[in-house]
Image 1 (cartoon, each protein chain N blue to C red):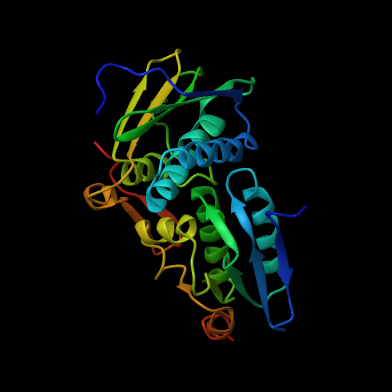
Image 2: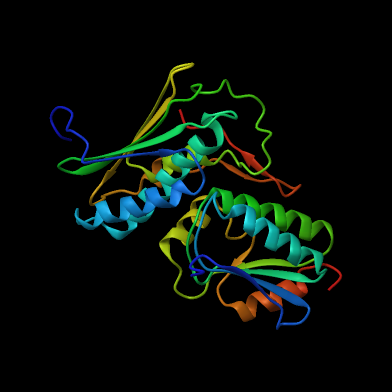
Amino acid sequence: MEANAIVLDDTAGDVIVVVVEGEHDIYTAPTLRERLDEALGRGGGIVVDLTAATFVDSSVLGALLDARRRALESGQGFVVCVGDTVEPGVQRILDITGLVPVLPVLRGRDEAIEAARSNGGDG
Amino acid sequence: MSDGVPAPEVVLNMPARAEGVGVVRQALAGMADALAFDAAVLSDMKMAVTEACTNVVVHAYDEQAGQLEVQMLAGEEDLTIVVRDHGSGIQPKPARTEPPALGLGLPLIAALSDAFELRGTAGRGTEVRMSFTYVRDVDPADANPVPGQVGDDGRWEPGEPPA
């Protein structure tokens, strides 16, 4: 029944992956913020994996930007990944808001985990 | 580009709550199935309408409950979506202080729709009217790019709103 799940995957060890699936908007943004808070609380790098997301709106971007700001303030890496075949409902809003280089947005989860390990400042 | 004003094919009227926005997207997808939409236009339409509905849910009504109304009007060449509330009207833009909102709603609607119009009267609600052509020649985001950027402090800084 969890068509729009947001779960934490900590199998990468020092980098926690927030896996976002399905459609997300103002209704699920509070849940996303909770999961991001939890991920930030672990103290390591953070990857937000939107590979299985089919739609995200500006409420989601707001949550991602807030989490990124807090991660950078505390020296934690922060990277978003979207997979190789990105849904237009995800790619389009990232493109037209110019957030791809800012967040930043990468393709694969593995490269995102590596990037989150190294862009956190104190590693 | 139809003559006169066609009657809406679909009218949705529901409480202005966050969980209703996804229902509107589902209805749009169903409507688009019958209209041979380009997939990219459908995706843009879902995004723009989501932002318009979100504005109603977040801004239209203070504490009291209110309605979110969505009309879909299929023309010869485009689908027009009207998102309406019966709240306090267009706000006189106080400081954008609500933390979750980036002020991206209207800029996104401008960038993703082929035409849009905002009408509002103090005390009588607000109406956003957006049109989406079934097959596009040009990308509206080229003419109406989303203004704003992330500042050095990591916060979104809205640019000038669309005229």
